[in-house]
Image (cartoon, rainbow, N blue to C red; front, side, top):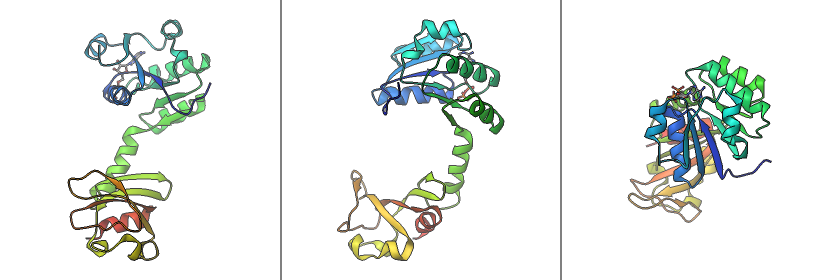
Length: 220
Ligand code: ADP
């Protein structure tokens, strides 16, 4: 039972990562079951999630009792205790849960989760470190590498493309990038098109090959 959009997600492990994930899902209208061993953590999220329960996720009976298999997706957000993470994933896989996501704290941990058959392994610290590398070295305000070698960068609009319609800047030919969206200072974001005219102080979202998009984000 695979669905494109997850209407309900079970989050196992409510540490810094799991908690932020669960609250963001709630804010977006997704139903969330939170599970953690720690009673204080469970108490602190009481009323903030659809349901929060104290349970040991390495025990199959506990997960069955909570009907975890009825959720569209299950995220294992246990990091510190690698054996608990591995055992939990093993139990979920044995229960035939169709969409298991798990956080890995090291490459070795991630490799084991992948070998077990976890459907999506995420590396939050590694990914964030790589992302910050792109931000700290230049002027980009935000950076997402969408695929290897292709990125989306948020940056101030450089003066070379200000005060003329984007369609007349020859940006794709000269810099290999496309301005996908823009924000005039203090206004909401909007999609960019050929007629969009940018001004000093505007912010843009640029897409293109990582090297081109980053180089463009450095222009003043
Ligand atoms: P973060 O780095 O995001 O804070 P942690 O790995 O420190 O993540 O936190 C993981 C959470 O998972 C902790 O709150 C911990 O109590 C919980 N946890 C660890 N083992 C189990 C388990 N067997 N069952 C349920 N929750 C667990």
